[in-house]
Image (cartoon, rainbow, N blue to C red; front, side):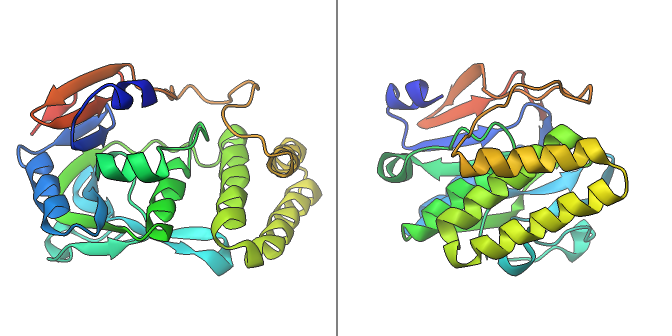
Length: 250
């Protein structure tokens, strides 16, 4: 992906998952928002649930630093109750996220965290560099939400990558974050979830060693997750990344 960006002169770059449904104005609204304020570094879409299309999954989100978690903005609200205005947030999911080339030129692109928190870290990097990250309720997508949060291998990435985010952006809370996840590990071990406890220990050990990217272990779910896009489309002066397949247009 970095190679493609460096070899194209597009002013705007749209990241879009392959398994989303979009409206005809999904992209044009993001373009309008990004161009409305030079301080905006990225704009994300309002993500609705594909299996319950009137419910919002997120409209960007915020870091809950002291609870070592994230808070999804407008989560589970009915579409009719969505905020009317553009929301300034800590992060937006790269499921549908438009950014500027100048942002990438200055701060770089997504870190290779494999899955989870790579988009969060990137948006926090934008914030730290003076750009705003926003989400627009007028740019809608529908996305199927796969329930993989409880699998052990996904928990590994959640813990490792969230610790990395704390180390970079809230270092004063890092010791508390480490203690928090140690308690999680002890809880699972005491309740005889030994493999889960081992996975949490592995994630903390790899964090301390500075390991990122994909770890080699057997995945425990049939869900297929692509770590790199393999299809690129150009739309006007927007470089458009589409992962694996064409999206549906609503």
